[in-house]
Image 1 (cartoon, helix red, strand yellow):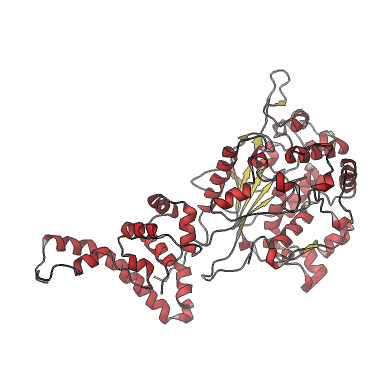
Image 2 (cartoon, one colour):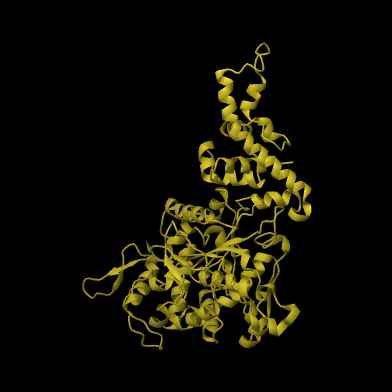
Length: 532
């Protein structure tokens, strides 16, 4: 028997309406329609009456366990006056018969398909499997937000008063969840390498112990295992599993700044795995490194991400770099720099045997130590040379949507022809934006830099945020969004913090994510399967 969620889906598709179109006709949000059709919520009596009228069916059909629609016009024909001859057609009944013919055909086809599915379980797995095969709209895919360099998640006290995602505009995840989306915020090492952060993200998503990999840990001289999460507290319950209708539970991952490299590597490892780790541990290899999970991720979105590194790592020495990063942490948190950083910030460096710091000077010492030892750290991955090495390890996945956003906070100086920061730039970013806006020839390494690298958002060059060098891409085309290559969005005005709500209003921030999520949710998903 069909339940109300199945009936709403079938009736909507019979009208050839999208969820957005039905929501508009009923004066509700698209998320409400999605929840009705997925069985997560039930429409109230007012909306049931409205749908009965809209679809021209009886309320009994919507509410009761009926397989065949009972159209309103059928009831009207059956209720004709008793003194009227059954074989004496009137003008009205002739019109009704003509009107009913198309609807009855639809009802007969639906009923026939149900019978076929019911009597051929070996081929279709019963009625539930049948519904999944004709279903166009999978379950709503959750969103996972991943912070960047120096950032934090809900596990840090700082997030309680100054959320990384939303900043001064309020908690962005809470707002998006209130709008009907499913949004979680990850907590990964603020100064750890892309590899280590990705391992932490995977463990948090799945509710398992962090496994940095046997081969990787030996190569870089740190512990193989890190924090342990429980299945009950996994960021996404049953990620990669299937619903009762056989729909894969995928996720949409969004990374800001260095978080972009984290989510890119996650998608690549899930699809292709890592041969070195499989060779080192065999049957004990983490699920992150075994591959074969290309269909666990629906989309990857990067915001101000240094895909090709940042020239900031050439124009300032390490001490100034650390000071800049800490300045951003304090600016984003709204806490004075004299505050005890250990009271609200989690460094998450247990794999290196480093505990938290209580003062800013101790924090600087910890960060400097991490940045100066080897290549397993954020500083190396964020340099153009390190990013080039990282890009060789990360592959695009054919069935994943990729979107990238870049921001620009500089403009051309009439005096020098170089880039200078606009007056609206976040104060802590003015100096780095100025230095990056002057650096057009690499004097540090063999990595080639030219004037295309001058425009920047205060931390990341626009040319780096658009797409990784060597990856396939296309400029954003709303009519032709593709999988397996970058859909490069137009560069937006603002600095590195604008997109997460720093130095900007709540309405602008909320509108950006509302628009982004609607675009992602509107893309075609798994193919439909038909039996007729």
